[in-house]
Length: 114
Image (cartoon, rainbow, N blue to C red; front, side, top):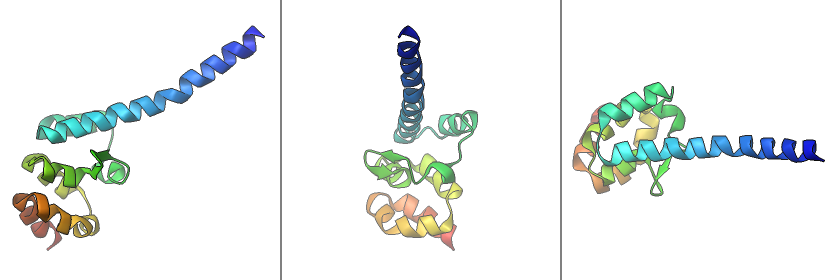
């Protein structure tokens, strides 16, 4: 009886760990973008072995993708870094919405897709 209860407790503990880790990673990335801290964002991504291209689809900050979120928060330095890391195809998909929030990032995006 105790072994089964202990086993269930251990399994349930481990099953929640990745979710909380993912939430912490997302929150940290969104915070660094919101305050336009390119250095800390780059360091955080490197220390967690993450790539912008790999996490772009799954990462939402206030319901927006990370590029549009950077434009909305006027985070030019981090936005330009994100533009440099994303594929031209993804940038083309987001360019119209990007222009609604930030003229500077729109210019950077247009340079990137040329």
